[in-house]
Length: 137
Ligand SMILES: [Zn+2]
Image 1 (cartoon, rainbow, N blue to C red):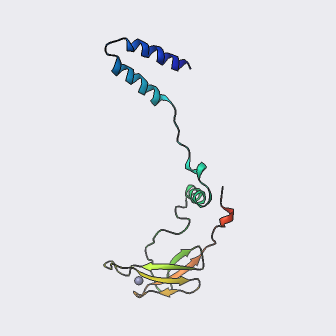
Image 2: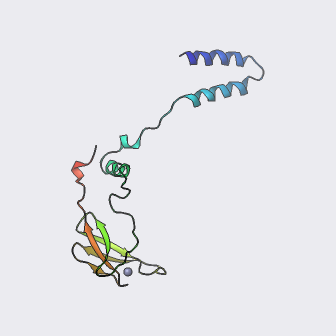
């Protein structure tokens, strides 16, 4: 309230001067800049799957649903490339060579390692999926 009164009285003073417009504007913007505006935290507004993902990111897990692409590992039958999934099956795409312009897609099932056309082996590792009815609110 006191700062509001101060601004009014100073703007009246400035308004009577010939160079009033420029000075008056700078007073107004400086008052707005000094006010504390704070954006709301997205975590407070999010619910369900979005909040689950934000909480996982906060705990350090950037990919809780295994959506990011991964480079192939060694890919032998004894040491296959592990593919994480939230179910017992998942579709996997393999870019067999660097010069390929297409992706070879195949279904991968739990406990059934599979070999791509290029010779690399893949194996599915199933993780328990989060319960959709117990998502954070
Ligand atoms: Zn391949």
